[in-house]
Length: 320
Image 1 (cartoon, rainbow, N blue to C red):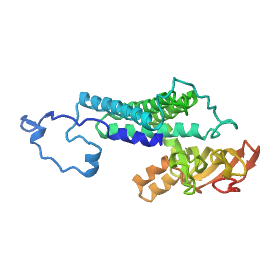
Image 2 (cartoon, one colour):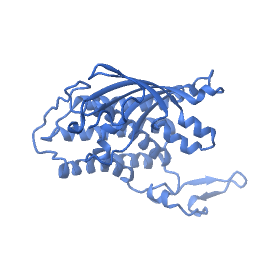
Image 3 (tube, one colour):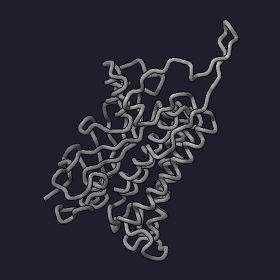
Image 4 (cartoon, rainbow, N blue to C red):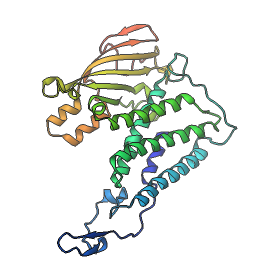
């Protein structure tokens, strides 16, 4: 639910005022204003995302970013006060642990913090670039905004009787934002490595879709297509995966046993396959979402201290 509230920040800003840009035609050296230029009718998407009708100045773009952060922060605090019992107690620390057996989610929530901050970094960076920000700037300000909002929610949690401030969450938020920046800053990293979420909804669960950790797996994928020696060979359609997931920590009464599994898998690079079929735009989705059953995993369960053979257990683990 907390991740859902961040979507409001994508539209939380002020529209630019009626500034006038001037341009000079090469042939006549005559000055004309952009107000006199013919305007194209804007699509519903451009209107919804507040795409500027004329290029924004650096100051106007900076103001949009500031307004997005200020208004978004206000929404988070107001929503938290109304629905998440923010400011009902003095600041408290919450010792949630990392990936131990005695933690609430076995560490799946920590991976969730890393991935959600990473994904929100992508969202804000794309939005800022859509408004006209230079790519080298958006790759910095996007993750900074995402990290700020995740941090604000953690700050609000410190005033909550049911939560408390978790430094572990802040560390994983930082890792997610930093990984996004590094991946965008260095093209070779982006060519080779993805951070993804695998998710098959459990419609019989009473847990909201954002915290259905029994249905999720988090993984890094090393893409063979990113290596020059393999980019023009059939090997470009394959990848090596390193993932982590838990089962039975949430809704544990529905499971025979708890599981904390780290796995290595050899998989098909779905994005590369779709790209070869001409579905270039669609293929980009699978740089962030892992299509289930497109890899062969070999895992180790830290709870039962046993190896997990490929697909020897159902997707939702050892469920009753």
